[in-house]
Length: 395
Ligand SMILES: *[C@@H]1O[C@H](CO)[C@@H](O)[C@H](O)[C@H]1NC(C)=O
Ligand SMILES: *[C@@H]1O[C@H](CO)[C@@H](O)[C@H](O)[C@H]1NC(C)=O
Ligand SMILES: *[C@@H]1O[C@H](CO)[C@@H](O)[C@H](O)[C@H]1NC(C)=O
Ligand SMILES: *[C@@H]1O[C@H](CO)[C@@H](O)[C@H](O)[C@H]1NC(C)=O
Image (cartoon, rainbow, N blue to C red):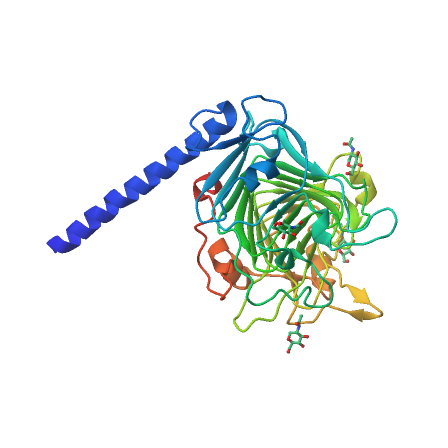
């Protein structure tokens, strides 16, 4: 009995300490972003113009970090940075964008921008990764999209990359074209765990790539594109965010699943979010025209849950991906689903009549209804979501 009380008391104290320090961390993170004060000790400052900054580019700051497990924070001061950033290290990295509105991604003041697609104007083509504004992956091989039903064969002995990557209030913009003109990544995220809070991702085709063994969580962020702009092999959870349609092409989601020796839930989950035309001028031209997704291979998995869909979405929801007359959709294998969506874009009759869209009930959605149920480590174990900033994501 006494022993029980002691344990309970210790648990209570421990809980209080944890919650208290996390709360402090949250407040000081926002203060660091707003005023440059209370930043974590050792924070590196990047600015192209401010004299007191440590580096003029984000990539130079990243390259100054040791290749080890130590945690580092980089504060990027307001401005537009024309550069590609490539993060290979394993230790935690936090990128903070300076802002006066830490809880509003539409008011971000830091933009990382690059203009590239997977081909140049002479027709020479390269792997999609070379177009990306931000790459997080341990090696080049692990970040390659490759081709065929299973993509680039990443060597077995490739290490895991970043275990805890975090970005706050940063826009990643690929300005290659103002329409779909081949894959043009804003983000390429593979073999790593990471969270993006109040960030923006802007391109037209293949904006956000979550590659093999990538675990990416997005919170109150903006993901904009036209064609297959949420795509990949890994697992993406998009929470309370805006999915902005800058046109229609392919589908919003295009996932390529992988056969593994363990059951996997690789896929993209868009939850409590808004799916709508990017602005009022584009809206009338895409009414009823955009598809929720199409299967990049037969193991595609995507769920739009509890989300609002404006009138841009097709009545049938998802579409098949047909190559030489053969559709990639396989009944009972491909999952192109929705759960409790609403808005003018959600046409229940249309979905039921479609041969490829699935409307899940509570029981069907239950295995996918929390990040800890879908994010897996490379061995297939579920449950480690300690790399998500819950203090921010629960607000
Ligand atoms: C990222 O950096 C690593 C290490 O320097 C390099 O091997 C890789 O090619 C880079 N990735 C890209 C896409 O440039
Ligand atoms: C997955 O396994 C099934 C059954 O063996 C096979 O038919 C299918 O082609 C595989 N798909 C991929 C993408 O490897
Ligand atoms: C609306 O979005 C489209 C598609 O991205 C873009 O071309 C256009 O410039 C935007 N218009 C306004 C007024 O922002
Ligand atoms: C909903 O879908 C059905 C079946 O495809 C179609 O007949 C109906 O016109 C659609 N309703 C709207 C509002 O688009």
